[in-house]
Length: 630
Image (tube, rainbow, N blue to C red; front, side, top):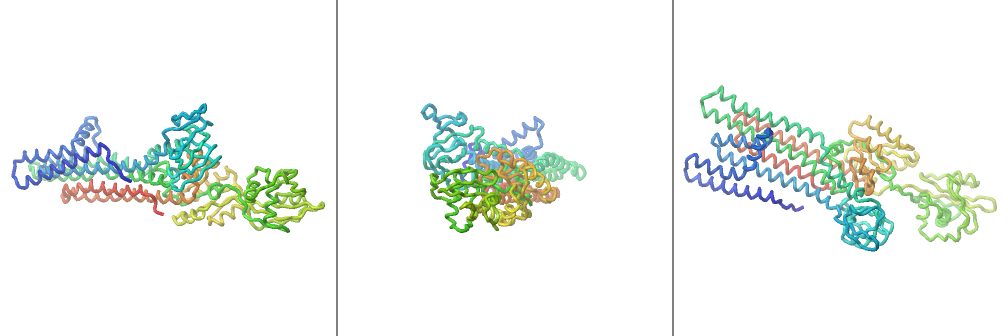
């Protein structure tokens, strides 16, 4: 992603270039021409002031307001100390490199913000609404629920709604990270923030802009930086005490030894003041206070590119420690849509059995009945269907082409007296029998199941490969169905026939027995109490689900459970980079601090300990912004 310097950054860059040029001219001139000390001082002070006048000004203003212990104060004291001891080139170089580090930091933060800002581009600028037969372009905030809007190809869909006219392909990449467009037609739901690609569509709005998906996502991302990780809070507190401590230590180092080693010797004073300046330069905490939040910011931004919204650095830290993942079944590991798995006929063919069942169930709106009608795929001539009687909790009795059929569960077969048998497969079994001369012939049964999502199996494998030890499913379904799904996916455990309150109890039991952290994954509609109770609540398929965005800590914008492993990998990578920077920065600084106090390290090494470490830490932190390699 190409980054364009801001006006302020360009100004700083130009000042640095001018200061470097003047410093080079001064150094070359003084190499060949001998001048008095005051002339040398003036020549070096010109690039020094050009490079660092704003640092001196800010440090001075902060000093007046009593805010003295920051990095600008450290730079001012260190460089002024170097000038006092006659090290004019070193003082100028320290200020120059400090400003180079500041520019580098500013560019890194700008790039990170740009990655988040790209997500912010999902915000629509306007909406075309139809009022009194006229098309009016208005702000999305001015459109009410149940109004009709028009979206043309190339425009962002401004509000959530249902298509009432037209069809198109919609690019949902900004929300899900998936580049393949999705076809949308009459009665399909569309989500605000997505891009209409091919056709003109009319949409009846189902929410105001404030309650729309795009508004909730933008609010979530904007507030993510407020929720800091423990390590981030620690660095903030550490810097608060660390800076005054090193200033006092430098003061002691610069003043106390000369009092005992030669109070009247300027050479001794100069030696120890130089050591104190080295101490001050290297002790600047910039590398820590900049790189740690930048790493979390980059990690959150990088995850958002994959359609994974993490609500803050604190949740990133929890995600990295997950060793137990608990799934809700329906809508998470399975599609939540019933479909015919198998047809087992008796006396007639599969097609004939499915045809009879579809006729019997064609007037029902029950999901199981609709799955049979969908599986039939052919035309159902309803003129052939006579009286249909629903038998509550058991099935239906229907007359088709003058013959009476029973279509339902085993209890219905018992009632009609058919010689039926159960199926060896698990799932919802619909039996069919035909009444003939006062007797019922058993015609066979149809096996119906909630379908497992295509990438559920891959998700479980990825989580196991990522080191997650326990993968548990909670469901309200009967035990045989749960056992079947758990076995197919390779889960380590399951609990069936649970009420919503039972799920909370089970999660609490698992939490007690968990050494690491526990994540619960649900669809966010009925799982809000469990999402809130887990260490980390992950909501699946959150586009259009208010409850998911509000109650979960991590929101996956599509229905793919494989994104859970991606979220954990991104969190672990981010935490690894954070700790790399902390250990590297503290380690290098500690070594140079000791060397400086012993008089072994000079000002050049101190510059590396400050600016060099800062730049390396920032470069390392920027790796968090990259998309995950799969």
